[in-house]
Length: 289
Image (cartoon, rainbow, N blue to C red; front, side, top):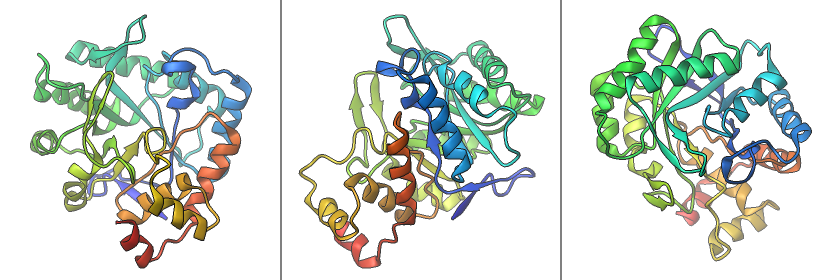
């Protein structure tokens, strides 16, 4: 299964429809070095060796931890590997998440990503929206589109967007991808300590209409409370875990969904990858709802 990013552009990117998100490779609270650096590097190498060619990162993971791990594990990168990063936020020493989204901030972040990832061009950049603030969306996206014209960025996407924000973004320029929280258990807006996270269900139909891949994040971390009897029942039928059925559900929900489950465990990575081979039936999907 593959999916094409920016299919109508001069430079489309086709990737396998099961990626890997690097956020979980950091220390506690997405801060600092991994508990097991050797395993973190092996996870990245194993993912790519297993056919994963879409990796999601951000320079504020760690900070800069996942970017440096990617470069150490995989550089020089395989020709078909797409590394997607995020800008628009940063971390304070107290581990809080704060906006970093003025045009000057965004340029600083892009230059930092280019340096730490050892790239001359970022293939895909998500603008991570941090809720209402003093910097208009048009000003933020305008800065990224300017760097796209300069050749520093190939494609621009949006992350953590409401439907209205995505509609506004589409009026401002080509939006290649959308990255929102989404899972079987959590489909609409979720409140987290660092702000509200719009759900994938709110924008999925719009993404489908425009041929925009929807990339779910936190699809395992916050999903699947034990009381979800339906998904547990389907998991028993397939001799799988509920987490695997959650990933299979995302893959079957729409051909425009590109899951990127993250983990800091090599065994869990292999378990996640196995979910891609689970073929849910139409009856299964109807039962799950």
